[in-house]
Image 1 (cartoon, helix red, strand yellow):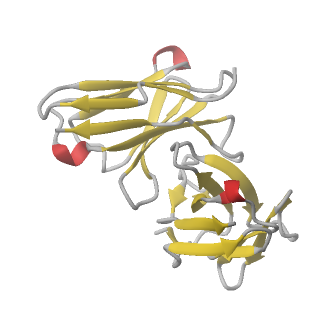
Image 2 (image 1 turned 180 degrees about the horizontal axis):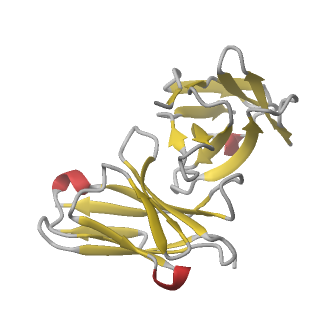
Length: 113
Length: 116
C-alpha cells in the first residue's frame, strides 16, 4: 500500500448528471476525510468517517452530496444532479488518529459542463 | 471560529536561497496542531511538517523548519536552500483537538516560484 488512491483522476460530466468518486485510504487508517478545493482556495472540509461511521458533515455538503464508507475501507462520494458550481478538485485524506498528519490522495478533478 | 491566514499569494526565491512563508492562525482552543502541506501542479497534498501547540521547540524536517510564535499566533514555514522542485503551492493548516474530529482548516495558500 503506497498511499491514498483516488479514482478517477479526472471527470467531465454534463450538468444534471450524477457522478461518483472513489477513495482507497491507507489500509491501517481508520479515519477518512473528504475535502473540496476550488481554484485559488485551500481545501475545504466536507465530511469525515471513523471506520464505517460518518461522524461529521460540513454545511457545504448539500442534499445532493452523499458519502459512504462500507466496511470501513474504501469510500465513495456521490454528487447527484451536478451543477456547474460543483466543478472543483475533490480530495480524500486518511489518518490513523486525530493527532497525526493526514495523507492525501491526488484528487479527482470534476468539470461540469 | 478557527481561521488560517496566509497573506502572500505569491513568492519568488532564487535557487539555493532561503524563503519564509507566512501563516497566522486564530483559535480559542488551547490544544491544537499546525501543519504545512505542499501541493505541486499534479494536485496531491504532500505533508511537510507539524507543530503541536504545546511543543516548546520549533519543528524541523530536513530543509523545512517551522517558526512557531505562540503569542503572536504565527507558524511561518522556512525553506532553506531552495530547489527548483520546491516550486508549488504551500498551504498552512490547523487542527483543533477539541470537538473537531480531527479535520483540517486550511489557508488560501502561497504560490512559491524558485528561479534558477
